[in-house]
Length: 142
Image 1 (cartoon, helix red, strand yellow):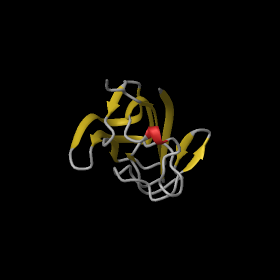
Image 2: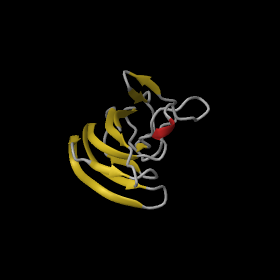
Image 3: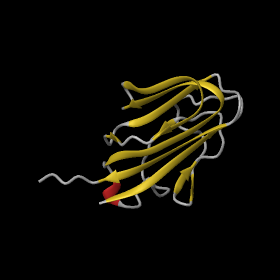
């Protein structure tokens, strides 16, 4: 069983992706968990939709492996950036770059249920956005 989900963060001009969760509440727009423009963001929890009580829309979604299908970032000018996989305690640098204006990644990267993506930038001066699409995959252990 699998399904595709996406998460989008937008950063105000003059601010940076700082590896934190956005301070705004997300809206579900055309199947994309979308955060309005903010001064912080870049921690992609990549969790499926939950109701206002924190319950998963589909209980089978809890604890599934996430497969990153694509990552698209517009940096709003030249920016140095680092993309990490984190479990909240330890960070592993997956990709990094300097003087880039955009980034497209289409690798199939698996994240365990407790892992998240963390994007950090320096040097960008214009508004930025990042969109991560992923698939939840239920693995059956026999």
